[in-house]
Structures are given as structure tokens and as C-alpha cells.
Image (tube, rainbow, N blue to C red; front, top):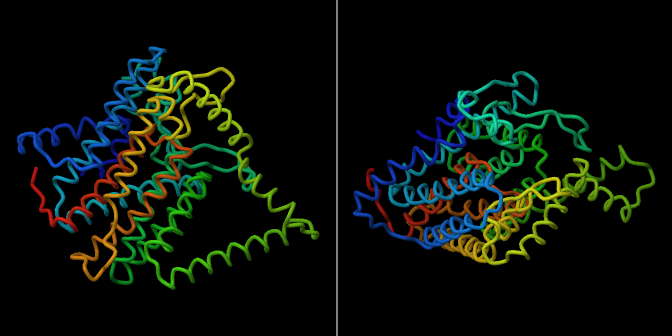
Length: 430
């Protein structure tokens, strides 16, 4: 229910604040019912360690105004701990899992419909929220606070391949975070397509898929698109591992090759030199938003330089640095963690990612699998993880609480499915 009400939270302007508040009561109710004893999985253990290191890094914050930034990001990991705990302790059968999968898909579908209406210029909402009258001007004057106080679903931008266009972000804080949410939930949509029966239900899933891909294109989030593609190829090659998968990959490569050749023949000079023009197109793709890539490189440079000054526990949060377009410690989960929480935080993050990968290992022999639907869901979890690991190279998902909520809920149901398969766990009502 909490997820389904996402559009309501967005309209009220509390979509970045509501999650830890609403999850605290059921979490403490669960802990009390178990006498504060729960099964601590490797993922929970590493996530707890990372959260503790994150908290300790607060003592190294230099600029007091950045404490607000710290609390905002820290609340995301508290929420993640609650989500994972609730999913593992309270979900124990396929029906419960499928309801949450459908809730996630419903949220992203609503976002995609709103995004599509904005892209086609049918409807582009722009309004002040309840939080506009509650937040102090000092917060509303920031880019983040302004997006809480006043809601809109995108803005005009420029991309070398499109020219001027409407860059959509729908219900999310930024277009890159919207793209991250789209590509993280896309494997769940593919899972729903595979297990759905009947012509019209499958047509509905197909329509959702098309809407999601259209929205993804108009976020112009290149890394998310590449991560989705790489994750899909990994899924076909190393999870499905069938001859049909290789045929699909060959077909995909052929379509890309022929499409590229057609584009070059129609829109490029007649004399086509692959050795010169293909690298030029790759460079054009990398710098398609006119300086976006170079700005990120500058941020990564000052981030690494800053980390070397405080290598152990970092700076606690992002910091504005003269000469950089974005704050140091931003635009990369890996480098950002090094900068903000130091080498200890980075090692805890790597341990968390490894724990997720190991716990979400599907049962290889489907003949020995007690529930093929749940195992298929865990199979698609591999796709989700590859997307997440690659996307973390250029994104910090904790900047948007809604994106993080969708992300950790996805991990929660995948972990619950894996545990149901292996231990036959039954849920406990809360």
C-alpha cells in the first residue's frame, strides 16, 4: 500500500521524506513480536556495517550546512535496512511476492504514463506542494529543496542526436534517477511477461514495456541504457544459457549493425571511413549533452584528490569544490563512497554488493527447484544486479529517496524469493 500511494506522496511533496517515517512502526512491531531477534543474513550484516560507518563519517563533515545533505542520504540506508528486514521476515510465499512485484510495476507504469504525457506535450503538471509552505526559504532555494517544494515532470534540454527536446523525470528528482528506476524495474516487467497467461494481459505488459523504453530514451541517461543492455546480455548468456539466447544476441547485433549502416548511408557523407567515423560517433555519444561527460570527469578528478586527503573515513558528505561543476563525491556510488566514507566505507559497500550477489544465486537445476516461478524471479535478479552494479559507476542512487525505495524493495523481494526457495520459509504477520 505504501508504494502504491507514491503518486499521492509526490503530489503532497513528501515523496522524499515519507518512507522512513511510515516504515518505523511496522519494523518495531516486528522486532517486538520476535523479542528483537531476527535472522541476520549476510546482506543485512554488511548493510548494517555500511550504515554504521556512514554514521561515523558525520563527525568529519566540515561545512555545517551539509549536515542536512548527510541526514537525507543517511535516512535512505536506515530505510533500506527496514525494507530488507520486513521483506525477509514477513514474505514467505509466492502470492505475497507477486503482489509486491505488481506494486512495483504499477508505480513505474504510473510514472511512465505521466512521462509519456509530458513527452508528447499532452500534459505537463507544474504546481506547488504542501511542503512549499512548510520548508524554510534557505532549503527551498537549493536545487534539491526546490524540487520538493515545486513539482514538475521535466524540462527542455539539448542532446546532439535529438536537438532540443523535453527531458523527462516524471515523479523522480532527476532524469538520471528516473532512468535508474526504469532500468532496475525493467527485468521485473520481463519476468511478469514470462509468467503472465492470456493474450490481453500479455498485451498490457507489452504496452508497459514500450512506455518504459520510450521514457528511458527521453531521459537520455546513457549509462543506464548501457547497463540495461549489458544486464540483458549477461542474463541471456550466463543465466538462460540456451542456444536461443545466442540466436537472439546474434539477431540483436545484426539489427544494430544494419541500423548503424543505414544511418551512416542516409545521413553521413557518401565516403564512409569506419576507422574515422565510428570513433567519432562514439565520442559524439559520450559528449552528447555538450559538456556533461567532461564535467563528470572534472568531478571524478577532484573526488579522488579529496579522498587522498582523508583516505580512511572520508569527508562525511559531498562538498562544493571550486572549479567543479558538481560537488565532489557525487555522480558515482563507488567514488562517492570513497570520498564520503573513506576506504572503510568503500570496503563495506563492496562487501554488501558481494553479499547480494551470493544470496541471489538462482538454483541452477530447474528440475531440483521447488518453485520454478520464484526461481525465475531470482534468475531475473541477476539482470537487476548487473544493471545496479554498472549504473552505480555514474550514479548515486541515495540522492533520490524514491529511487532508493524502489531499488531496495526490489532487492528485498528478490532476497525473500531466494530464501523461500532454499528454506521454505513461511511468513509471519505483522
